[in-house]
Each structure stands twice: as C-alpha cells, then as structure tokens.
Image (cartoon, protein in one colour):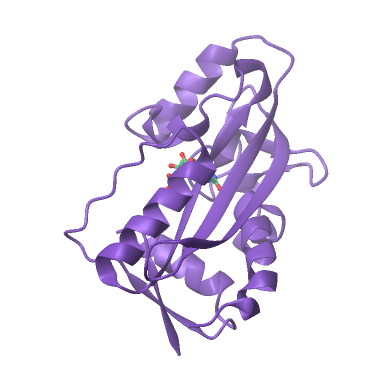
Length: 191
Ligand code: IMP
C-alpha cells in the first residue's frame, strides 16, 4: 500500500476521502496534529495546492488536499474561498447568505471542489476540479449534510443537498466529481 497523507486535521474529511479512494491502492493518513496550515490563496486551486505541497514537504510523503466552497453568481462568486469563514456556525453562514440575497430572483450558484496531490518534494503532480450547479432557496429544507446543504437546491433532482441520501449527494456533488476525475488519473502515479 502506498501512503498518502491527507492535508486536514478533520477525521470526517479523512473518512470521506477514504470512501472515494477505497479501491485506489493508497492508504490514507491524517496530517500531524501540530502542523498548522493557513489557507491564504484566493482560489480553491491555490488553497488545495498550497495545503498538499506544505504537508508533503513537512512529512516527506505523498500528500492530498481539497478545497471547496459555494459561489453565488449574483454575488460575483462569493462566499467562494471564504465559505467556511462566512460566519461562526453553519446557521450563521446560511443566515448571512440569505440576508445578502434578500428578494433577489437570480439565485443561481455552484459548489466547487479542487483536489490536489503533491509528491514528497512538494511538487503538484495532479489536480482535478468538480462543479455542481444549483440554486439558493429562500429558506432551508432538509436535515442531512452540512454547511450550506439545506439552501442548495439541485433542480434536476428537485431536492436540496440536505434532502439527499449521502450516496446520491456523492454521485452528483462537486466533491464526488472532483474525486471521480482524480481517480481516473491516479494509476499514472508512482507511490
Ligand atoms: P473546506 O473545503 O474544508 O475549506 O470547506 C469549505 C466550506 O465550504 C465548508 O466549511 C462549507 O461551509 C462549504 N462547503 C463545501 N462543500 C460543501 C458541501 O458539500 N455542502 C455544504 N457546504 C459545503
């Protein structure tokens, strides 16, 4: 098994990545707890790459990182890379977003996820992106998921992300698509 260090301190994210990469032949491991990473990039790609590169260099192993967020068309792509910092809790972040949109009828938005893999010297060798388009509802619907899921409505499914089973969400989500395209390129890597 080849070792891939995940550039996150979040065991939930590790589990999710394990689910996507279960048949890939890579063994995933959390980054060292004392290794701090700051997301200073102004794009998802920049943040995914800086996290993967930093963890690879610090541990001397291959490393993987993802960065994701919600872009609302009429807000010029905000909250974007600030999605996690838009409020202290998920409820606060959703309240702020709905307030900023007000009665606006143009509510198209997209979730974006970029995944990057760095080799032990920190060089980025693989990058992939996934996008899921949808609309922001006027009020939350559904109890599943996390983050902005209750207000993100996918017209093709007539459901919010929070109303979907985890399997359905994974099959159409930005993260699911980014990992699916990453998996197609993974066999080209040497562990
Ligand atoms: P990060 O990728 O861990 O930096 O998190 C980005 C932030 O974007 C999260 O804290 C959520 O607020 C939001 N986000 C990313 N993906 C999703 C998703 O699938 N559902 C809901 N919110 C998400």
